[in-house]
Image 1 (tube, helix red, strand yellow):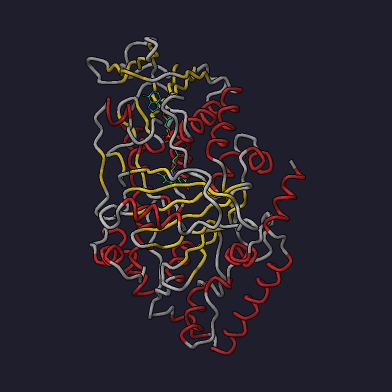
Image 2 (cartoon, rainbow, N blue to C red):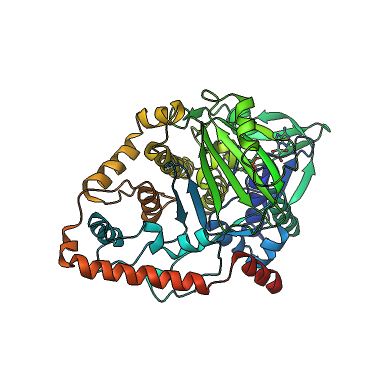
Length: 504
Ligand code: FAD
């Protein structure tokens, strides 16, 4: 474009600001996407400032992200200390119980009617096992097994998916190596100034502490929470959701690994938030996400350290955040990704997934010439809706929790967003799932949470009347037993990791 961001020419220079997970994922994906297009991509990061250094649990989309770059699971897993993640195990959200949210489905539908309708009928008659026993993914995760799903599952009972737990720094390094091979140039320097075009307000260039000026046509802001370009330079407001998501910080600590690594992330409810446990190959990542209005730092830190299975290998790090999103993710010639675009607590491991969808959306809408407002508006609408849907899903967990204490009571008593209230209403009225555009979580995920909390509809699909209770109980038992047999025949997580190593 090279004329001060007048919003009309081809995008010849892309400048990515930030070299955390977001920056290097964007660099790798855009490097591949723009290969041969004559576009120069430069990434600026400051090793002095560093990265946030957390973000170790993913959802299965990450595997499709790197597969699109030609990387295999074995290659990424070996490079990043990775273990397999088949779901998230929620402990004590309903006191004294635990349940798994798997990447997969529950049971087998019958005569066009959802499985959960039959399960609920049998449950009301006292003839059903807990929901997770009808999910292969949940049972593999609960029992510490892992395998690669069959490419063409013979039945709905065989459907599951998997993701990774990985060392975030190693993953960023792996992305960086790919991006640099694809021709992305890297500059290690601190940005000290951002120049905007006098008329358009577009970003023209950033100035480095070396005095060098790096000009660009499109800027991708991956600078972390501060949002150096999207927030500080362009003044895009931040929509604060802390009246809904009360947690505003965390302590994070790594520890020695103890025992066999589970094939799931564990999230345990605590006094004013929750604790994560993420198993890697040779260590574990732990953290306590909490609400500072309800728990002081000393108490939170002590609660975390008292509940770590292995010895900590570092001092806990304090992180602070404001849940919410940028009013717009794309402003003028700047697209924000990662923490610069907003943040939702990592209860469902969605931040890296939101980076992936942001990159994918940018590719889908990448301007051929200039910056058409229609393109920017669509990007922003999709990003906003997607993040709101994730917010609602996270809120659901707090809303349904039956824990005692001021924090948990405040979570239950708040006024929910209308979008979530409408979902809950339809679930109550008919056991049906209200679906909006850009949902990251399918009905099976919502069912996992509803079922885990035993928040179940009174009213059933009238079609389930056609199957008698005895017949139903027998059918359910066959499903449960088939899943239990498959789990017993599946390698343990450690055996699976050994196979992965052998395949690399
Ligand atoms: P950062 O890692 O902060 O990178 C910012 C980059 O910008 C750095 O390279 C920095 O040097 C650079 N930069 C900043 N200012 C300048 C400047 N002036 N000049 C030059 N460079 C600059 N996500 C998940 O998906 N799963 C999880 O389990 C998970 N757990 C989390 C737990 C916590 C407590 C938190 C807070 C987040 C978690 N996340 C998780 C989110 C995840 O960590 C981030 O989404 C991810 O790391 C991306 O961060 P980033 O690249 O946007 O920012």
